[in-house]
Image (tube, rainbow, N blue to C red; front, side, top):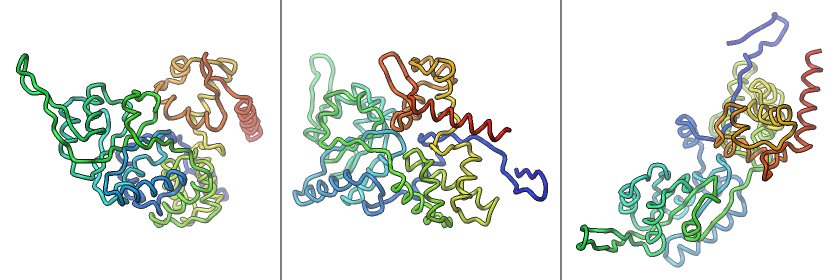
Length: 352
């Protein structure tokens, strides 16, 4: 709906809040699949990791062996699943994608391992959530490409070693510390994915805009990248939202002013913080005098799930120096306190 105060004023969209959660919805999966890069050349960012992977893949091809098992960890939305698909494409292998919660029963993990073909890639998301039984089934499969299967009962119980085709397991997690030591040690390559720089996100924004036939200027792409929290998934979502705004409000071209106006309308500030981020910082500042405050207490105050705060919001706030984790809880940094004061001053000036 468009609201206009009078004919001389530019129409404005109703303000609404958009949470910048990097967690995936069904719509996001379809959207991301359409724009997902297929090769290292089209995959933007994570340069050191890409260079290392290119060497490992080439060496595996020359030795005619599967690529070592890989573990990628880091905050959500940085491209772990996309990178797994790129690796499969670069090695010329098919990929099977699943998640740890879908592998609850022994027959689930056994079934997927037995269905693999030689050289195939198995990607397990949220691998830190695998139960102990599933992990123990994986150990011999990862090390020796065998499954230990029990037959019979009682005194007739026997353990058979059933071979499985040589494959590459790629695990992804937001909580590397939650993996058991024996599982983590079985990965030949372990790497953390880092938040993206503004320049890398600018490239992501321009690539996505090009795929979606959205007209965008360089300064418009920069404006979006600066508010994308260092996360490609968020940058891609904002491209769509800003493009919608440009179509309704302007001539469909996303420039710096249109991008900033659209993002302001979505309550996303110049730091990339949304309403929930600012509420979290404000609660620590006002209710708990800057902290420290425990995670569960903070979650109850905000009406949010503690896991969501810890895995979705905190990584960026920690990365940017807005909060600290201490032994007694979360604590506001002087930088965050200064930022909140500046925003409050800006709000007061706009009111008067």
